[in-house]
Amino acid sequence: MSGWKISVFPITALLLSGCQSAETDMSNTNPLVYQPLEKQYVSPECQGEHCSTVQISALTFPDAPTLTDELQTRLLTLAMGITDGAETPAQDWDSYAQDFFVRADEDRDVLPQFMASDAQLEASIYAQHDDLLVLELTSYVYHAGQAHGLPSTVFMVIDERQQSVVSLNDMLISGQQEAFQEALAQAHKRWMAELDYDDQYAKSWPLGENHNAAPLEDSWVIKYNVYEIAPYAVGQPELTIPLEALQGVAKPRYLGQ
Image 1: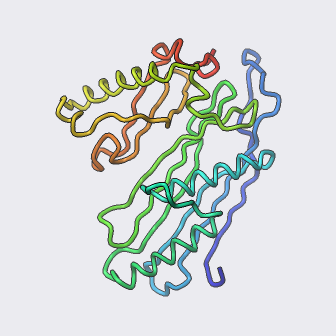
Image 2: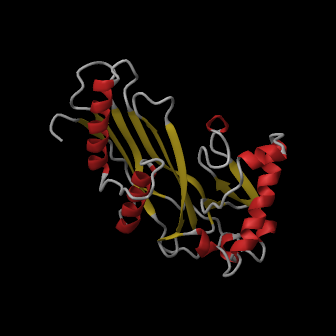
Image 3: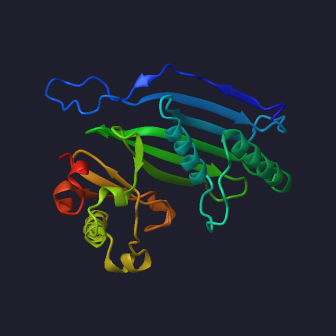
């Protein structure tokens, strides 16, 4: 790690839950506390102006270290991009930066005319309600020589009462996975109609299963990454399922009830 330029900016911990009014259910007696974490790494081998960089904008949970570890693992997995599943993510931020710069230096030697490699990893609050904290984890990774960088997004849903991560299957009523897929298919049809896509488009880019769900106060958002149901130029499609379509499909806890 010697020679790296690393900057860390600790920020005073903030309460996630905020102030609750008298009308709000005070069921969460132990609100989560988070502390933003900012890190920036610059390739130690670079002496010019255009150096490869890794930027981290994450969160830590001082009172829930397992959540801190889980968030780090999920972000580092996301930053791996599209893989065959045989690879494992880096152990921590420093290890990721070290591995990234090894490849960046190799790419720079072969393709010196291209832009410097760049990786950006971020965790931000997407929604918070009913003692649920929904984080949006994003990564954007560009390796020198590629036509474009690869953006990726995954939601991380935390039950603040239990201080644990919740999966899609946890949110669905047992045996309702097929019903959820049907609600997702209807959301997909609405999305295609809004963008004026025809049936031929759906044949070229068919809808696939997706467990990347964010429960909001008035709907669920299901987000796809590039190339999953649309070409790169479309970006990362978001399908919206209204809460009424999830009655009897999702547990009341995740429908604001």
